[in-house]
Length: 330
Image 1 (cartoon, rainbow, N blue to C red):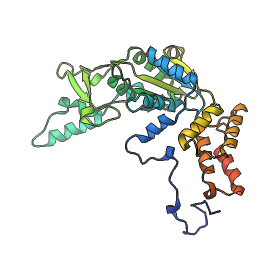
Image 2 (tube, one colour):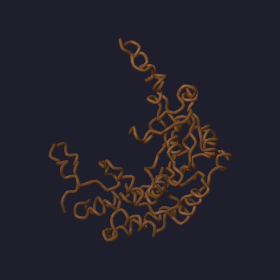
Image 3 (cartoon, one colour):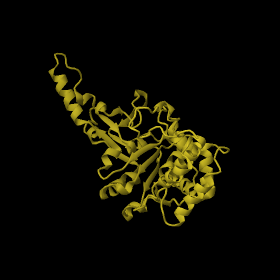
Image 4 (spheres, helix red, strand yellow):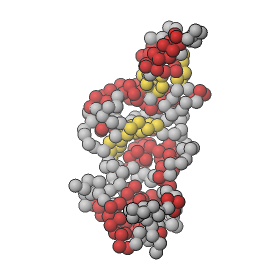
């Protein structure tokens, strides 16, 4: 058996990084055409309950709040919908404790505008003053883009990731926007009499042709986007917020779904028999109340598939134990 290690910790510079094999497909970041997002969508295998609730959210034009432990596929569900329905790329808004509604709707770079004003005023032949080109200092956020660029028969998919990590006010601040599907850009409202229409960049595009037309400072979506909010259940959300959402809890995948997931990533005829024991171990962990993520299973199977180029038996068990270590282990 050949030595599978690239780094040996030998204190000698005799290793060869050129021997490093290609990455797993889901960890290949060299794409330039969104192929990672496409793969994430095409390889996800939703349960029947997930399919039902996504369709309900599409019909009812309601946000879908998806809860479940980390790594169960909450975020990937949005990519699966966008891929299957041939929609535009998913808009992802990752939430943290400092996230605000305003950054989700749009961003205004007042400092850049002030610097430009100062620069223009100091030149001998000043160009347009910033008030005449305010669209150059505005950019729609992920939520604003989802509302502004949805079309009647082709809504955008917006994933608001880990809403339970937000400040307690964010869920309440979202209520009106999610109810009416509209918002205002204050900086443009003040110029409505002078400049009724402007085009500003969307969150996911800098192309001039994809700038979004804003009429008199107001945005109203022609069709409500598919909004998927994910939560790890780390804190309770306000009842007023929950009332406006459809709710789905993603459960641990069963053996059939796990095998379908592995086949989608590795190919139906390439999954090794050693994966059977890993699947059984994964399911057993969930049944014991332990939390393991599906990407941990993918990592373990990928290492098993190294074959003769993988770890020897003496190291194999220790490596698999580390790769499948439960997330809630103390």
